Image (cartoon, rainbow, N blue to C red; front, side, top):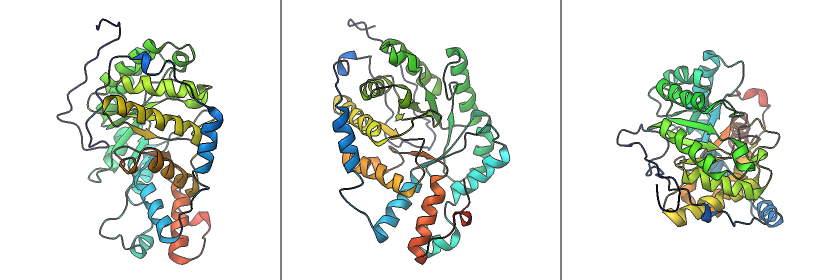
Length: 338
């Protein structure tokens, strides 16, 4: 243990890492450095004003908008996290992940040689094996929620075993949930140790830390939780489970992006970002793409570093693409839901 009392941790070897999300070097993490964030202040009004300008200061139209929306699909973690999920439903989701757009739209866009596909498919641990089977040969990784999703209040031993199970079933990425009480009580060592243990349990699988920002009450807490999760070795930080009263918002995402930017300045590591929950329209996708480009740069417009957690969003994007191709808006029933 270092003289400052912070905790050191070892990271598993990545020499045999699966060909999944992050082609960049894994986040080795750092010892817990409370001084990096303890005095952080967030001007909520300024964050809200900045977020409000993202989709109003500029417009992206016609073929440029279509290109951005196709890009959004390639960044999507296509998700089903319902209590009535079945292997058949997951198989249907995976077929949509392989071919997000109807063949006539792909042909009209001139993308037959390299048709778009989503960034990953996200399911519950018991649905990982059916998803892996359905996606075989596609190059699309399977992500699994774990650690007592969505509340994360089961005993730590059980949460770690759930990670081991999901990885054993073939999951390439693990979306963990943190204990919100550690943030609300400012128990940063407990939060760090928890995420570090989960990172260790993931082995070669990439870890996406869900902060459940709607439960953290303040943007300052969001910033601090982001920094601790990254120090503990998270490869991505993610806004929400999709089950909170308030899920992904642009002000929260702005603060998390600023934390990612600060962490890179301090360590040299690029950490990924994933908004999830409430992103349902093509307009939403455009807003978050603009946020990433303006706050973090073009590197965060690739699936290595940016994902959008969504399900119904895909149908609206496909509807907008059909409008671009045909000049007409079709009924939503023409577009299969994921």
